[in-house]
Length: 107
Image 1 (tube, rainbow, N blue to C red):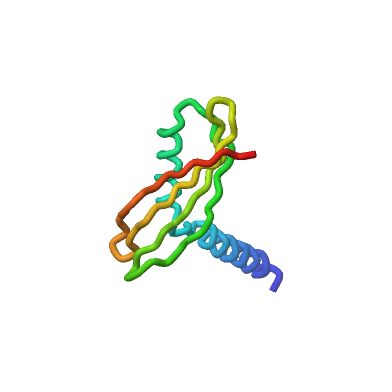
Image 2 (image 1 turned 90 degrees about the vertical axis):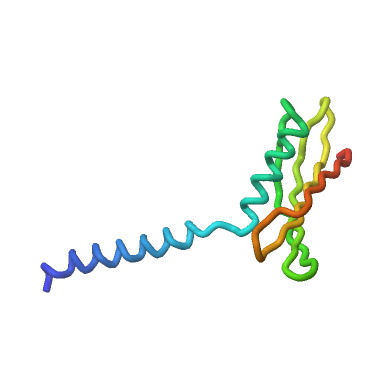
């Protein structure tokens, strides 16, 4: 019985590790659009520091279209700004439809 304990324990540990790896490998569905929003902010504010990034959520429009919002804290000309990127896309074909960037000064 003792000689079977070590292989069974090792198998159990391996199965538990594989299960936890599978969960961590799942990516949020807004990740693609977060990368696009980050690239747009870096292009709009070249050489400026992007201090923080936050996913603000998703708003359902009609017929499979959604708007994902991302907010960035950016320093521009030494002044802190909040830049919001709103990306409208279609969930059915996973295509970008519209992209809007708005800026507001931060106190």
